[in-house]
Structures are given as structure tokens and as C-alpha cells.
Amino acid sequence: MKKLTMTTLLETIKECISPVGAAYLSKQLDASVATIGRMLKQAEENGYITSISNKGRIITPKGETFLESQMTQVELLQNAEEVIALAFSEDPKHSKDILEFRRLVEPYAVRCATIRATEEDLHEMRDLDFEHRYVTRKGESGSEQDLKMHLKFAELSGNSALFQVLRLLLTENNVYQYFSAITTMGEAGSYKDHEVILKAVYERDADAAAAAMEEHLDNLIKIVSKSMEN
Image (tube, rainbow, N blue to C red; front, side, top):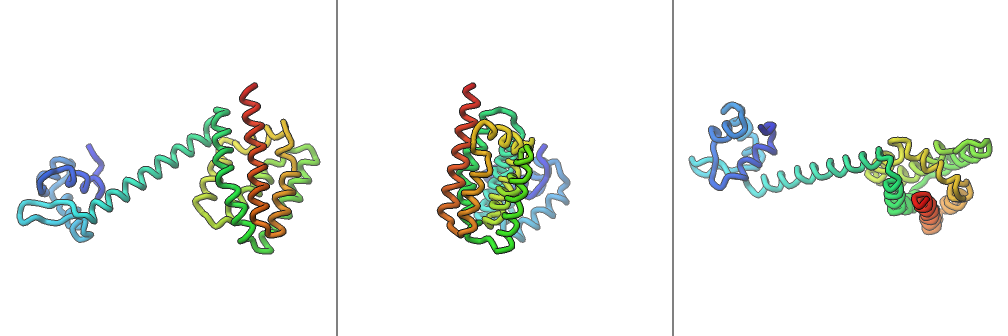
């Protein structure tokens, strides 16, 4: 039995070749005629359906557009669930997939951040950079500070979808701690990479910042690929 919503009502009407009435829909959707009647009235007021004489209702082009938009939202939710599954996966291949996704979006993020950042934002980045240097020199991973820096770039990009997706990918299942751990296998995780990126940001050189971020993530991908071969 379908859950009674405007979407299921319109889908049921659309599936019918001929106009349908409240009695038919009541049986199909296991709802009272009164309930169906109220929903039909609302759908008609919204322009989603229209009456054909006394034969019943059919869906309108506006109703079909509404259904398409609902299906798009369902697909987006399904994609979001796939992203969540990827974030929770412990498969090393998925770690590489995440890095390759980051390589696509983070150079763009830091490019936009370089252009949009205020002096206050730059001051916050300097504080994060100083804290990262401090903890790594003490022998700690610096993963927390590193994560904050990357998410700050995403936030300053002005693209909320990019920020939310990146935050999900990097914070679930402690995935960023894993990336910090593997960087001990090479130089990609050292603060030297951050120096190059941040220098470009401070100098407002968006192209250089994007190129430095891309190189940083390329190095990480190489390290992960090498670890998968062992």
C-alpha cells in the first residue's frame, strides 16, 4: 500500500489512461473518499489536475512538472545516501575515490576562498596554520587543524552544497584521521604543502592557490595508490 501523499495521488492519476474519480482513487490508495476529495481539491487549486466534465480528473502539465521535481529530490536523496555510504566505508579504494572527488572540488574551493576571504578570515587561517605547525612539531598528527583549514576553504568558497558534502565526506568515520595517518608515508601531509597553499591565499593569487591544492591532493592520491599496491 502506498503512503498517501500528493506525489502518490498524482502518480496514481497519471498511471490511468482515462479520467479517474474519488471512489476509484479511494480504493487504489486505501483512503476514505472524504480524504481523497480534500486532496483532489488541493491538487486542483494548485493546478496539478483538472476535471474532465463529470468523468473525473487528469493530471496537467504543471502536475507532471511537480512529479518530475519530486523525482529529482528523490534522486538527490539517494545520491546523498551513496555519499554517506562512501564516507562510512572502510574500503581503501573508497578512500582513493574520496581523494579524487576532493581533487575535483577543493582547488575550486580554495580559488574562490582566495578571492572572497576577508582580512578576518585570513587572520583565522594564520591562527589555524600556527596551531597546525605547533601540534605537528610536538609529534601529533595535526589532523584536527588540517581538517579545519580545508573546511574553511570550502566554507569561504560561498558554495554551501560543496561545503556540506565535503564536511560529510571528511568527518564521518574518522576518514580525515586516516588521510593524516597515510601522509606520514610521504611529504604530502607536512606543513610545507600548507605553506605553499596559504602563501598563495595570503597573496590573493587564486590560480596559484588552486594549483597548490591540486598538487597537494595529487600527492595524497599517489600515496594511497601505493599503499593499495602493498
